[in-house]
Amino acid sequence: EVQLQASGGGLVQAGGSLRLSCTASGFTFDHYAIGWFRQAPGKERERVSAISGRDGNTYYEDSVRGRFTISRDRVKNMVYLQMNSLKPEDTALYYCASARSSTAQVTPSSYNYWGQGTLVTVSS
Image 1 (cartoon, rainbow, N blue to C red):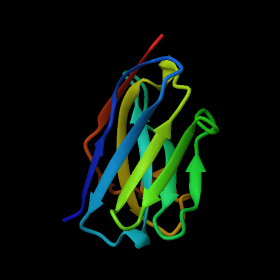
Image 2: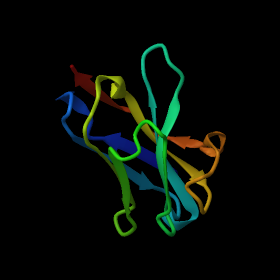
Image 3: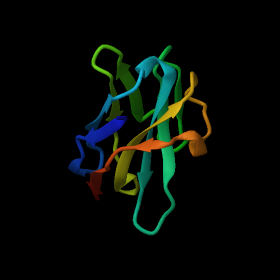
């Protein structure tokens, strides 16, 4: 059974940092891309970042590039999202999801397994 679990959210002041973790199980890590998505109240879900399980190639959405860093641990089947210089507009429910793909550039519609979200709140 494929399972994904996001954790690490919380309340932080603008300019602060958080590290989100995604624990993945039930599938061969190297055959999948893992993505981080977020959804703010009243807005559509958007992909923030992604990483290929096999070779670690990455994708970043323009608004987070240079502030967020995605990484993976192939032994532990975990993916991390280090978020620095957080802004109030980063406030959202963050999800991790998996797509069977060798590239982090896989289209968002390809993600078919989702974990429960973790809430990130950035105060101004």
